[in-house]
Amino acid sequence: MKPVRSFLLAYAYLVFALLNLTGHAAAQQDEGERVILVLDASGSMWGQIDGRSKIDIAKEVVGKIVAKWRPQDELGLVVYGHREKGSCNDIEVMREPGPLDAASYMKAVNGISPKGKTPMTAAVKLAAEALKYTEKKATVVLVSDGIETCGLDPCSIAAELEKTGVALTVHTVGFAVDDEKAKPQLECLAKETGGDYVTADNSDELEIAITKVIDEGGGDNGGKTGDDGGAAEFNFIGHVRMAEGKELAQPFDNANWEFAKRNADGSKGEWVRTEYGIDVKIKAEPGDYILTVIDDLARVEIPVTIDAQKTLKIEPSLEAGIVSLTGQFSEEADLSGDGAAWEIAGPDGNWIATKYGSAASFLMNTGSYLARLSLGNAKAEQPFTIAAGQTQNLVLTLGAGTLAVTGIFAEGGPDVTKDATVEVSEGEADISGERKSIATKYDANSVFQLPAGKYHVTMKVGFATAAQDIEIKPGQQTALKINLNAGYIAASSPGAGEIHVLAKEKDIQGEQKEFGMQWADTMDAAFNAGSYIVRAMKDGAVVGEKPVDLAAGKRVEITIP
Image 1: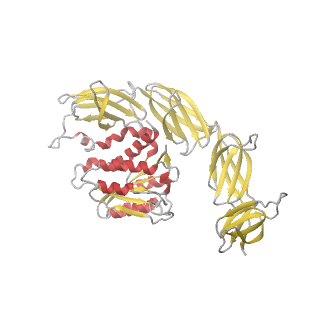
Image 2: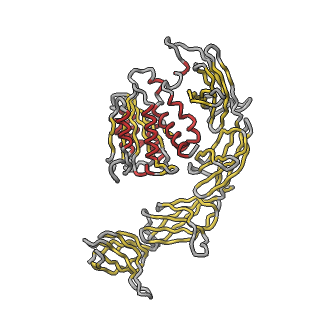
Image 3: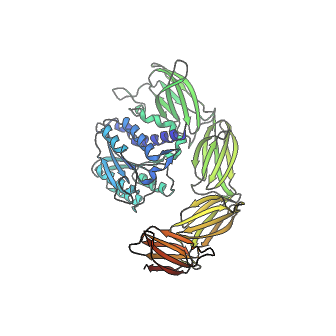
């Protein structure tokens, strides 16, 4: 399966699953459910996933939701960040909750063009209000790829909504979230209201379950059927094991049972239904099927024939085992936090699945595999073999350390607090004097995980720059404070079109080196300490200029002429 399709299926499953969490109960109610989808249209939704923008994937998935929407359920739409840049008020109820007009709904969705910020908390509150959450049962589904950028506290707002609402539930979907700070915000929005937080990053585990929500009935109503509401006869009963004589246990205790029609030639045909659990009891349509039982990365495929009058009982074995992976910075220092990525690959090196955290476990069919651990720029890998019913514990050591970079403008301060770019390059330059860049961050307090070795670290703020060499040792955190030896020049020349900062003296060839410029009549930027000429120009002509002697840690303000 190609990456975009895999991600799309996973994303669709997540959103579909959230919108159908109450499906069984709703099937027994006349009034249906009342739902608003809150869709992120901030600028980051133009981010690419294997050549396709996240907003395009989202639009396609919403189309799938609309196509399968139950007529008795209401659906509304709230969008934020789609009309203007930099505004925290750019939130719109594009469709009030009500009976779904699919054409009108998709016309609104397809017209969305991401532009702005991420006021997701205020958007959820607005959606709740549109649903009259203080009077009626209501469900909000938020799909966001980033962190709250407009100052509201998601946890406190969610707690307030829970306290004042009749029966409000907020479900959140983290869609390709890059900022780790966004995940606890999305989780809190859901948790405080009794909802679920899920992430589309786990496509390798979830793509197989997407078809569950296509079943309009939402399953088999818990094994009940018949007009009298009594228990019906089951014509299929199944129980799945990890291996012969080995039962499945947490966290692998929720298998998927996927039923597809069996074609005349014995091949798998059209999907029919999906059930969940270690044990399954259903009354199914009689016929020939291909049954695929799936749990995490393990699966088994079985041809079955279901009869109307007889009960088929099967107990398939996944013939699988578990690999439990933990990581270390070094022999003396364990990994911590959620930033590490664990990849499983086949013996040919081709990717199979990814999970995140300082440790991870996978349930897998017997065979040979490759485990890969990565954290920042540090990587380690190890081959392993899975035996049926067995758990293998592996420890991967990165041989890495942590580099924490901060900056100051001068000895004794002030500290660099914003607008910093920190680049880590190889310690040794090549024959042309160039160094290969390894990692770059845009934070005045930048932290890198790096393999042990020597590096060259550069910090830039405005037009000021400074660099320092450093050595990283395995399992250790190294703190590096770079002195920019710089200050700020704030220049104003009303009516000018550009401002240039030049060397005070010409070089031996008569040239005056330029250190920075801005196309505006003002400039407020950092420069390394030194003597400069600040020149204002308009339409190619010099408006005026002034000399500036800039000291480290100081600010010089001038007006030209």
